[in-house]
Image (cartoon, rainbow, N blue to C red; front, side):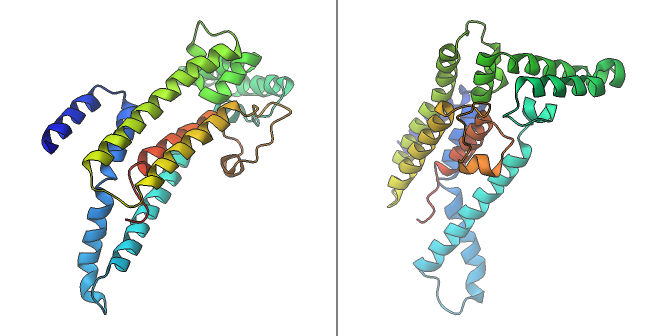
Length: 258
């Protein structure tokens, strides 16, 4: 029965988008990998310990394995995040229209294809399109929350239109991740801290909603007191959300203490 369930899950995973597949494999991997690494470390460390390996040794080693991997992934994700249009223009997300205009003129002088050659054409076209979107209030509002992909919505005109389209895209990630968490919890080993996995998942979902419905960085009401805004002041809500998605992908499966 276990093999049939696993085979069925793999068939579903093959049909999922790449970002969702990554989340599912993160949940699957963290259901088994930390235990394997912890057991391996303790097996090699046993000759150097002055006492027999106890559950306490296992719990501490397990926690160190999980925290080390989480720290590495968060650091890697923060470094690999592509720059947003504000960063490419060299202004803060709170920049006013006049600052954006001045920044784009300077960017165009430095990076126009006539100056740097055809190899810079793609970058120039992308930034010009981003600048034009930032000069329209509704598109700027949508870009801050959902990234450049949302700008391709031809039917979207108002903020409500963009919000509806963006929420549909975002909910897909959470629905699949939640179902995967339930599935792998059902076929995996029982854990006394399974409750905290679901609490973490719901907390991530609530954090994403807070980022989506908070004022934009360009709004006078924006305060920017969240932890992510303090750590990454030039990043936008959609970049914080993608970082949370990656964090959810690698923390939906693990428990810090077994």
